[in-house]
Picture 1 (tube, rainbow, N blue to C red):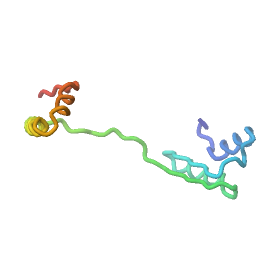
Picture 2: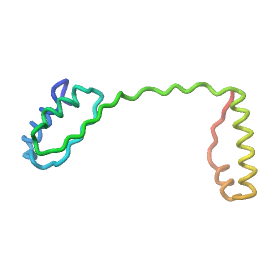
Picture 3: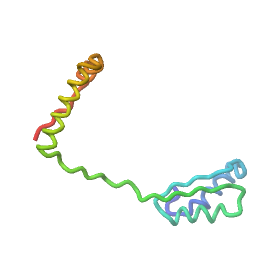
Picture 4: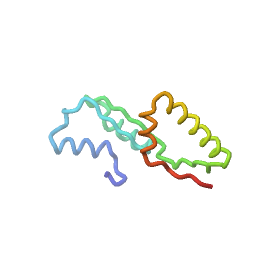
Length: 107
């Protein structure tokens, strides 16, 4: 949005252009760059606004290990036990579960 520029300066310029300079009591910035958070803090220093800056590390892919045959076997056994309990306790709920599409797992 700011193409590498100072987000604090850009925000103040935008607010001034829109005649909204004194409209907000709080400003929140969530960014993956500590420098951008610091730039915003400096730009808002001395203004009548409370600044909340949060730096995050970014979203990283979650590596999920493959399911082993033993885990699949245990899961199927647990599912059968759970179904047996539901059949005697909440048969109408069990029927609703059975009507839902079930994923097929194979190894």
